[in-house]
Length: 219
Image (cartoon, rainbow, N blue to C red):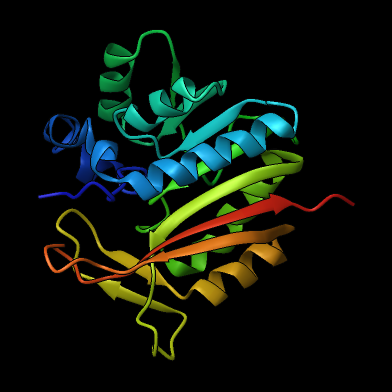
Protein backbone atom coordinates (compact mmCIF):
# COMPACT_ATOMS: atom_id res chain seq x y z
CA UNK A 1 0.00 0.00 0.00
CA UNK A 2 1.34 3.43 -0.92
CA UNK A 3 0.71 6.59 1.04
CA UNK A 4 -0.20 10.14 0.00
CA UNK A 5 3.40 11.24 0.38
CA UNK A 6 4.96 8.49 -1.69
CA UNK A 7 6.29 9.40 -5.10
CA UNK A 8 6.56 7.22 -8.21
CA UNK A 9 9.20 9.38 -9.79
CA UNK A 10 12.38 7.49 -8.97
CA UNK A 11 11.46 3.83 -9.35
CA UNK A 12 9.26 3.61 -12.42
CA UNK A 13 9.08 -0.20 -12.77
CA UNK A 14 7.93 -0.62 -9.18
CA UNK A 15 5.29 2.08 -9.49
CA UNK A 16 3.93 0.91 -12.86
CA UNK A 17 2.13 -1.93 -11.10
CA UNK A 18 0.38 0.35 -8.59
CA UNK A 19 -0.34 3.36 -10.79
CA UNK A 20 -4.12 2.99 -11.05
CA UNK A 21 -4.55 2.14 -7.37
CA UNK A 22 -2.36 5.09 -6.40
CA UNK A 23 -4.38 7.49 -8.56
CA UNK A 24 -7.68 6.27 -7.15
CA UNK A 25 -6.52 6.31 -3.54
CA UNK A 26 -4.89 9.72 -3.42
CA UNK A 27 -6.59 11.90 -6.04
CA UNK A 28 -8.01 14.16 -3.30
CA UNK A 29 -5.38 13.70 -0.58
CA UNK A 30 -4.57 17.42 -0.41
CA UNK A 31 -8.05 18.00 0.95
CA UNK A 32 -6.91 16.49 4.25
CA UNK A 33 -3.58 18.37 4.32
CA UNK A 34 -4.36 22.03 5.08
CA UNK A 35 -0.80 22.93 6.07
CA UNK A 36 0.59 21.59 2.81
CA UNK A 37 -2.08 23.43 0.84
CA UNK A 38 -1.00 26.64 2.59
CA UNK A 39 2.65 25.99 1.69
CA UNK A 40 1.72 25.32 -1.92
CA UNK A 41 -0.20 28.59 -1.91
CA UNK A 42 2.85 30.45 -0.57
CA UNK A 43 5.04 28.77 -3.18
CA UNK A 44 2.61 29.83 -5.92
CA UNK A 45 2.63 33.43 -4.70
CA UNK A 46 6.44 33.50 -4.65
CA UNK A 47 6.56 32.22 -8.23
CA UNK A 48 4.03 34.80 -9.38
CA UNK A 49 5.93 37.61 -7.67
CA UNK A 50 9.10 36.41 -9.38
CA UNK A 51 7.62 36.71 -12.87
CA UNK A 52 5.25 33.73 -13.05
CA UNK A 53 7.51 31.49 -15.11
CA UNK A 54 6.57 27.90 -15.84
CA UNK A 55 6.58 25.47 -12.91
CA UNK A 56 7.69 21.86 -13.18
CA UNK A 57 6.05 19.32 -10.88
CA UNK A 58 8.89 16.81 -10.91
CA UNK A 59 7.69 13.39 -9.87
CA UNK A 60 4.11 14.35 -10.61
CA UNK A 61 2.60 10.87 -10.45
CA UNK A 62 -1.03 10.91 -11.66
CA UNK A 63 -1.03 14.70 -11.82
CA UNK A 64 -3.39 15.82 -9.08
CA UNK A 65 -0.86 18.17 -7.47
CA UNK A 66 0.07 19.57 -10.89
CA UNK A 67 -3.61 20.35 -11.36
CA UNK A 68 -3.70 21.98 -7.92
CA UNK A 69 -0.80 24.24 -8.90
CA UNK A 70 -2.64 25.13 -12.10
CA UNK A 71 -5.67 26.03 -10.01
CA UNK A 72 -3.45 28.41 -8.03
CA UNK A 73 -2.72 30.32 -11.22
CA UNK A 74 0.60 28.75 -12.16
CA UNK A 75 1.65 27.55 -15.61
CA UNK A 76 2.35 24.09 -14.27
CA UNK A 77 3.36 20.92 -16.09
CA UNK A 78 4.30 17.47 -14.82
CA UNK A 79 7.23 15.11 -15.36
CA UNK A 80 7.51 11.54 -14.12
CA UNK A 81 9.56 8.47 -14.99
CA UNK A 82 6.50 6.21 -14.89
CA UNK A 83 4.70 5.99 -18.27
CA UNK A 84 1.62 4.55 -16.55
CA UNK A 85 1.41 7.53 -14.19
CA UNK A 86 1.81 9.99 -17.06
CA UNK A 87 -0.91 8.21 -19.04
CA UNK A 88 -3.30 8.52 -16.10
CA UNK A 89 -2.42 12.20 -15.65
CA UNK A 90 -3.08 12.97 -19.30
CA UNK A 91 -6.51 11.34 -19.14
CA UNK A 92 -7.47 13.06 -15.87
CA UNK A 93 -6.16 16.51 -16.83
CA UNK A 94 -6.08 16.77 -20.64
CA UNK A 95 -5.67 20.54 -20.48
CA UNK A 96 -2.25 20.20 -18.83
CA UNK A 97 1.11 19.02 -20.16
CA UNK A 98 2.66 15.83 -18.80
CA UNK A 99 5.87 14.22 -20.01
CA UNK A 100 7.82 11.05 -19.22
CA UNK A 101 11.27 12.07 -18.07
CA UNK A 102 13.97 11.86 -15.42
CA UNK A 103 14.76 14.40 -12.74
CA UNK A 104 18.43 13.64 -13.34
CA UNK A 105 18.34 14.71 -17.00
CA UNK A 106 15.48 17.10 -17.70
CA UNK A 107 14.65 17.98 -21.30
CA UNK A 108 14.45 21.66 -20.39
CA UNK A 109 16.59 24.70 -21.22
CA UNK A 110 18.92 26.33 -18.72
CA UNK A 111 17.13 28.85 -16.51
CA UNK A 112 13.74 28.23 -18.06
CA UNK A 113 11.58 27.62 -14.99
CA UNK A 114 10.15 30.00 -12.43
CA UNK A 115 9.57 27.18 -9.97
CA UNK A 116 10.03 23.49 -9.20
CA UNK A 117 7.91 21.31 -6.95
CA UNK A 118 9.60 18.08 -5.85
CA UNK A 119 6.91 16.63 -3.60
CA UNK A 120 8.37 13.50 -2.01
CA UNK A 121 9.94 12.72 -5.37
CA UNK A 122 13.50 12.30 -4.03
CA UNK A 123 12.77 9.68 -1.36
CA UNK A 124 13.77 6.77 -3.59
CA UNK A 125 16.96 8.36 -4.88
CA UNK A 126 20.14 6.67 -3.69
CA UNK A 127 21.80 9.26 -1.42
CA UNK A 128 24.85 9.40 -3.72
CA UNK A 129 22.60 10.66 -6.55
CA UNK A 130 20.93 13.56 -4.78
CA UNK A 131 23.72 16.08 -5.46
CA UNK A 132 23.45 15.62 -9.21
CA UNK A 133 19.66 15.87 -9.14
CA UNK A 134 19.77 19.09 -7.13
CA UNK A 135 22.32 20.44 -9.61
CA UNK A 136 19.86 19.65 -12.40
CA UNK A 137 17.12 21.50 -10.49
CA UNK A 138 19.43 24.51 -10.23
CA UNK A 139 20.28 24.32 -13.93
CA UNK A 140 16.68 24.60 -15.12
CA UNK A 141 15.58 27.22 -12.57
CA UNK A 142 15.82 30.88 -13.49
CA UNK A 143 17.89 33.04 -11.12
CA UNK A 144 15.62 33.84 -8.20
CA UNK A 145 13.35 30.90 -9.12
CA UNK A 146 11.80 28.90 -6.28
CA UNK A 147 12.00 25.26 -5.24
CA UNK A 148 9.65 23.52 -2.82
CA UNK A 149 11.08 20.13 -1.91
CA UNK A 150 9.41 17.63 0.42
CA UNK A 151 10.72 14.45 1.99
CA UNK A 152 10.73 12.47 5.19
CA UNK A 153 13.11 13.84 7.83
CA UNK A 154 15.55 11.84 9.94
CA UNK A 155 14.97 11.45 13.64
CA UNK A 156 15.85 14.59 15.59
CA UNK A 157 18.80 12.90 17.31
CA UNK A 158 20.08 11.02 14.26
CA UNK A 159 23.83 11.29 13.72
CA UNK A 160 23.74 10.11 10.09
CA UNK A 161 22.61 12.46 7.29
CA UNK A 162 20.24 9.81 5.88
CA UNK A 163 18.20 6.91 7.17
CA UNK A 164 16.77 4.23 4.90
CA UNK A 165 13.48 2.52 5.58
CA UNK A 166 11.45 -0.35 4.22
CA UNK A 167 9.00 1.13 1.76
CA UNK A 168 6.09 -0.84 0.36
CA UNK A 169 7.13 -0.16 -3.24
CA UNK A 170 10.90 0.47 -3.26
CA UNK A 171 13.70 1.30 -0.84
CA UNK A 172 13.35 4.87 0.45
CA UNK A 173 15.42 7.34 2.44
CA UNK A 174 14.88 10.05 5.03
CA UNK A 175 17.09 13.15 5.06
CA UNK A 176 18.57 15.33 7.75
CA UNK A 177 17.03 18.81 7.22
CA UNK A 178 20.39 20.53 7.81
CA UNK A 179 22.21 18.15 5.47
CA UNK A 180 19.63 18.63 2.73
CA UNK A 181 19.88 22.39 3.15
CA UNK A 182 23.67 22.17 2.82
CA UNK A 183 23.36 20.15 -0.40
CA UNK A 184 20.99 22.76 -1.76
CA UNK A 185 23.51 25.50 -0.99
CA UNK A 186 26.22 23.56 -2.84
CA UNK A 187 23.93 23.52 -5.88
CA UNK A 188 23.30 27.27 -5.69
CA UNK A 189 19.89 26.99 -4.03
CA UNK A 190 19.56 28.91 -0.76
CA UNK A 191 17.03 27.84 1.84
CA UNK A 192 14.37 30.48 2.55
CA UNK A 193 12.07 28.54 4.89
CA UNK A 194 11.47 25.10 6.31
CA UNK A 195 8.54 23.41 8.02
CA UNK A 196 8.84 20.18 9.99
CA UNK A 197 5.58 18.32 10.51
CA UNK A 198 5.44 15.89 13.41
CA UNK A 199 3.73 12.55 12.75
CA UNK A 200 0.25 11.93 14.08
CA UNK A 201 -0.51 8.79 16.13
CA UNK A 202 -2.61 7.51 13.24
CA UNK A 203 0.16 7.88 10.63
CA UNK A 204 1.38 4.67 9.07
CA UNK A 205 4.99 5.79 9.39
CA UNK A 206 6.15 7.62 12.52
CA UNK A 207 8.39 9.98 10.55
CA UNK A 208 8.57 13.75 10.50
CA UNK A 209 7.87 15.39 7.16
CA UNK A 210 10.12 18.14 5.88
CA UNK A 211 8.90 20.90 3.58
CA UNK A 212 11.79 23.10 2.49
CA UNK A 213 11.63 26.23 0.35
CA UNK A 214 14.71 27.46 -1.49
CA UNK A 215 15.54 30.02 -4.15
CA UNK A 216 18.17 29.89 -6.88
CA UNK A 217 21.01 32.23 -6.04
CA UNK A 218 21.21 35.39 -8.12
CA UNK A 219 24.84 36.03 -9.07
